[in-house]
Image 1 (spheres, rainbow, N blue to C red):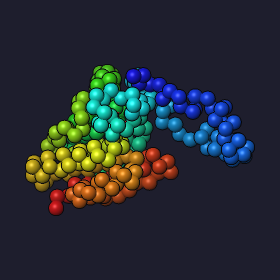
Image 2 (cartoon, helix red, strand yellow):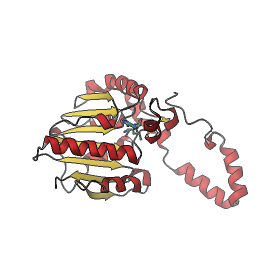
Image 3 (tube, rainbow, N blue to C red):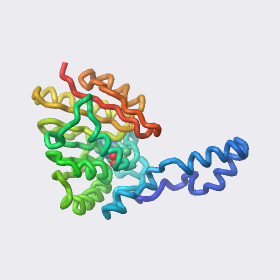
Length: 254
Ligand SMILES: C[S@@+](CC[C@H](N)C(=O)[O-])C[C@H]1O[C@@H](n2cnc3c(N)ncnc32)[C@H](O)[C@@H]1O
């Protein structure tokens, strides 16, 4: 797996061919309009600003087909690896969630599908009780662990990366901030929520707050959350770039 390369065969490998084809299909001015929109848009794959500042390796893209996940079903349900921009993670932590800002020192942060670890490392800028990244790919986890060596000395929270399937992750006690950046397809999301639900009901601790901010809040994810009435959809946060819309769910035991 080449973890930092773009998917091979991407049409953007030959931008002039794409432009010529667009002119043929759409006419010159329409093609030019789309070219400008593309040129001015934010491209997360090319954003390595966090790494340039910190000397880490959290960027790039790994398409689903190249993820080192042995089981076919689990691999095809996985979404590609692409890191979320650091400022989005900070915004999600700083935002008043359901009207109440969280005090990180009272929460454990967990990133489901942590990839090379950027969101988890950014969360460690805050004094969480602990920050935990859970990632199924051992190659991505190995990179995250190298990043941890660089960032732990300057972090405000203990950082842990676990190579595991999110379905088997055992929730810690206390208040939880369970971050998801559209990590998997609907069947695995359903299984993960079912696992969380049964653990939370079993733990039976009532005086705790569990928030699940879901980044890239697509209709499919909303539909699956809707199957679990205890995960109440509290609000949707809009952003001009649909990729960075997120929905906050909060656990409320029935
Ligand atoms: C969109 S990336 C998110 C990267 C990271 N959370 C961030 O915000 O920078 C989704 C990640 O979920 C991981 N993933 C997919 N299926 C998984 C599973 N069943 N268990 C754990 N991780 C999984 C993928 O390998 C990929 O790295």
